Length: 366
Ligand SMILES: [Zn+2]
Ligand SMILES: [Zn+2]
Ligand SMILES: [Zn+2]
Image (cartoon, rainbow, N blue to C red; front, side, top):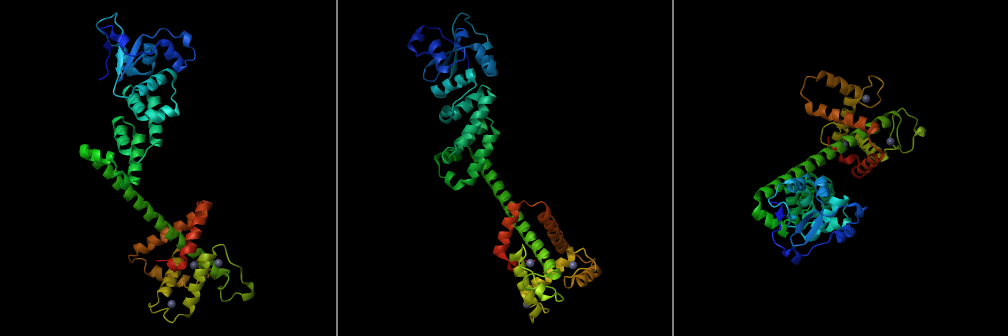
């Protein structure tokens, strides 16, 4: 595709050229006087010829080195390397990078996609890295499909993933763009690839959401367990152990939103007529909390939570029965309890407290 051409006529004067001096001043070489005379010209799409040095080109781009080293018929004639198909200024910026290893933000903004293509074709990894980063930062709904195609062609995985994410997060808007419609008609395989990515991203999100909800429930239950123990041993604002001196009553504890809900539930449980016949859903919840406590409680005789021992005895008798779901719940709540006491960062703990405040104990579903 890219090959060396030899000029056979003298019409070169008719095409615009940049003199070596102008080139040097334009590119601001650190030591321009030490550079030898340019020995090759780059030909751009609008016919501009840029004089350059084979030594520098070859040292930065192995592809250009190959082109330069390729033997050509007329030894005396001037060497020309055409770089066509991209704007002339993009080629100038590219050559400037080969000389200086630098590229301005403005150039990246204007010619990022062209420079990405050039750096890929001519194997200039530092520039390719700069371009894929810069193009990725400037993704829009309008250009994302085109850039995705370019990222695929140029084998730029970071940019590819960035495009896919942008696409899947803004799919409704992207679907209306010209770029999308064109791609749909011309590259059905890419369309399929995109739809598959979106589908996987959706189910990933769903899994995370479900996991987070479950975690929240286990944390809420774990906190309810802590409150139950503390109400039954030392008592809190309105409820405490029956043998406790009421004047010793304590102020609100640090999990008060959960604790208060639990205290209401206990008061209800103590007086409800439907406590044992299974007709009251609030009492059912209380039974389940008591049973859950007993399942994770490791105190043998000293536990002051009502029915703890009775539930333990009953469970020992039923050990062989298949209670896999229940034991899974117990395990999860127990591990949520460990997590909340050990590893949860402060911010998370506060968030959690807020959600518990919103839902209160009324939302517990066991
Ligand atoms: Zn409390
Ligand atoms: Zn009840
Ligand atoms: Zn207990």
